[in-house]
Length: 591
Image 1 (tube, helix red, strand yellow):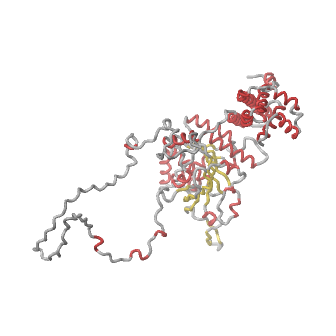
Image 2 (cartoon, helix red, strand yellow):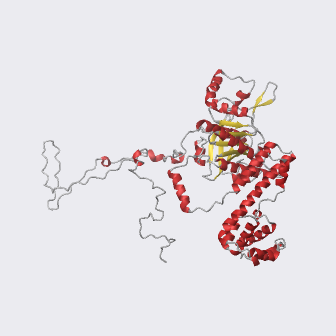
């Protein structure tokens, strides 16, 4: 471990920088359009260490953004307008940069050197900030560790090589490969059939926001989803509960899975029947195997949450399937701000980055403002998201929970007349099943629709009243009913039901004589038929091929249709049969 004297020595050293590389980059910018475009696309003002170089590059960036000529004269004029020419060293220093005569062919190497030194300086700055906060002693050490991890992660994300443009051929190649051979990273299903049909599941790296007014059941809804994923899909779920304790979550899961009211489980005066106790004992071995992990620490920040998810993945030895957060407004920011809106924006953005980094879908609960209460319908909209509009921007899916019966029954109580003659309000029956609407207000990968579920408040469970395939055609409705006169009997001639007869073509030289009237007596002999020409050989009627069985292995063993290998696909050949077609953008197209 370094001593305090060593720390002071390092603190007083000159930060990493390369003056020659900075001059070379500026010289190439003043002399080459390619170097100018490359430098402005990669470097920032802060990447230069010398203050004069920062001012000069800022003027170069401004001229380039305005599509103006960049040379020593125009840069000097721009510096004069900004009043920073003297700070840049005057026209004499600009002339010195032009005379540097750096090799334009090596401008990419100069940019890498400047950027590498800049990254080293930012790393030192981040470490110094953590060291300063540690010396002050006002910040909890655990929060400092999470802050350090967050800062280092930011440097890692922004310190890599810049991504180049992808050609359409590269994009289509990867797309078709994913269609033929889907990736193992599949969407996580909520096991609500209609909801999964609308959202196509929760895909890795996405952020889903579930928002509702208080008492709408948003915590219960996410607990239902988390339990479904852990029990039915057998995927590890990390559930961060910043509001409820782990025991409360356990009670809700037992209530929904064992069909026992939460009041019976939590009430001290309510005794469970032997049948209910038997259901609980029977469900414990089954529920105990579910990979659902609950973190009940309050005031957690996104950096600490990311660290705990990584630790859980390392302990399990496999990828997490889902991360649930209850709820977003109770989280603490990594860097406190005077604006609550800015803090929520930082938290929302951090959750989206966490989902992308871990490649795990994240579901976060959020509160709504009171604006929905002012509407007659009480239906929430995107602008009702509380504290920040950044939540709407960062989220891939935004869902609202709306229960119309809640507002109908709100404030209503059954009134009984007691022995004292006074009106005594009593609570409504807690076994009432209410309708619930899951409003998918934003969906980047699909439609925006409303999914209808049922809500049992006593069991804190959402469920589908009808288990049907959402892709199946809708059944008949009253509008499809036939008219009243559709079943009126109509006289139909019997000739319509007679078997059709096939006439045999006769020769033109020997036409058949007309048949005489038939004799009603059975002993009458039938008249002889005129000889007819020999008939032509009959042509067999085409038969309808049997329907194709999609499960037939012959379709995929090479005897049927196959997908062409992507690597062997002739991208330079036109697959159309029409020889007259010519690509108007090809090089061999005639003028």
